[in-house]
Image (cartoon, rainbow, N blue to C red; front, side, top):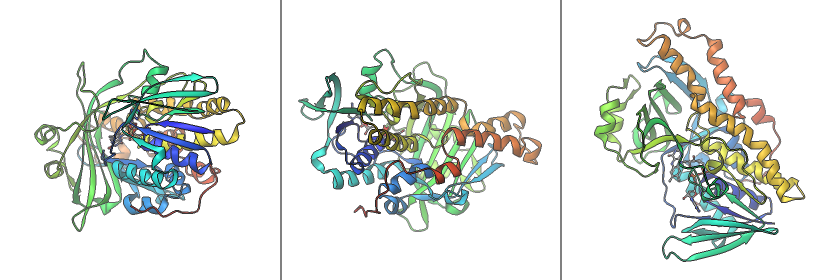
Amino acid sequence: MDAIVAGGGISGLSLALSLHQAGIGVRVYEAVADLAPRGVGINLQPTAVRELTELGLGDALARIGIATRQLSYFNKLGQLISSEPRGLSAGYRWPQYSIHRGQLQLLLLEAVLQRIGGENFRGGLRLTDFEQRGDRVCTRFRDSATGAEWQDEADILIGADGIHSAVRRQLYPAEGDPRYAQQILWRAAVDAELFLGGHTMIIAGHFHQRVIAYPIGRAATNGKQLTNWICQMTVPQAAPPREDWNRLVSKEKVCAAFAGWRFPWLEMHSLIEQSPEIYEFPLVDRDPVAAWSFGRVTLIGDAAHPMQPIGGQAGSQAIIDARALTKALLGASDVIEALKSYDRERRPAMSDITLRNRGFGPEAAMQLVEDRAPDGFERIEDVISRQELDSIANSFSTAAGLDVEAVNGRRSFVRPLRETTIVL
Ligand SMILES: Cc1cc2nc3c(=O)[nH]c(=O)nc-3n(C[C@H](O)[C@H](O)[C@H](O)COP(=O)(O)OP(=O)(O)OC[C@H]3O[C@@H](n4cnc5c(N)ncnc54)[C@H](O)[C@@H]3O)c2cc1C
């Protein structure tokens, strides 16, 4: 069996490694000619770290990421709402890593090039369309430099081509643009002093205005950490800017809204001022669809379930998609049935998470606290009970497949590999 993967992002590269591990031939086509370490922070939940570890990347991840031990929620005044242990501290057998998205992509790419060979990873070729002919899928690509057309065919095609997926567009031609949630995110990564011990992720504020910050790696400067921050706020607009991970915004614009957010452990004004570049991104997702798999074609990652970045799910679920799809292909005698079975297993849960994230997902408690105590509180127990906090957190965790016992106890999707050292 052979597969064409359109898109060399987190999902496409993870899928290539996974298919290769399972002995399935794979060729990856990526629209960008020379992948650079784009993006800022992303979170890999233990369930996804388990999969990358079983793909032989555990040591490499530990070298570039930060093992997150705690997630703390605060109100807009910096008063603690709740704290929960994460990763190994929560009892998982694998850590949670907060990591630079671009470094993660290049790590995966390095492994892909080593394992499937440069001839099977083609940068600078954008998928334009495909056609299912008999027992093959014929694909066409456009060379971004020359405009020349390139064709290839395989037993299956997987669209791993992100929120503007060309594969999805052909399957759902009437779908249109992503859905704007009336909020803007400003994001950056900057070398900064350690806060709250150096392994904590914080979220402060409420639904309409909040700050998220967490360390994602070693800094160039001694004693500091590369720190990811996001300032998010409601900005109603009829037509938001098209989402572009490279769109820059001025420090003045972000400071005007967030300079006053000063906590004893984090000072937003200086973080914003020190940041070399700040990116602006509208909060978008898409409505869940009725099917991902159509004959010999399917979708994974953001092409399948573009969701609001709440609860640190998008990257992790993309990796689980890759593994679940590989497992389905390994277990079936008929590839069309395998793609259907992958769809049945993954789509309902991802549709659920996409909709939960519109309602603030696991962060819903922050808005309850804002509604009940907008001027702050003396004792959090007087505002929200432990039971209410746990019920919000546990309900999301179960829906996202993050229960500790479930992650630790489930069987491997694909037989684990011996750890392989990746040269970075
Ligand atoms: C440049 C960039 C920066 C990002 N930065 C962050 C971040 O800082 N934090 C965060 O949480 N999430 C970020 N994301 C999104 C995050 O990577 C995804 O939500 C998640 O990891 C799922 O990954 P994915 O591989 O499905 O999609 P993506 O990561 O979006 O990858 C899709 C890939 O497909 C390629 N592609 C698109 N169209 C075609 C086509 N027609 N043919 C071939 N290839 C195509 C794209 O160039 C891209 O490499 C970023 C995405 C991109 C593309």
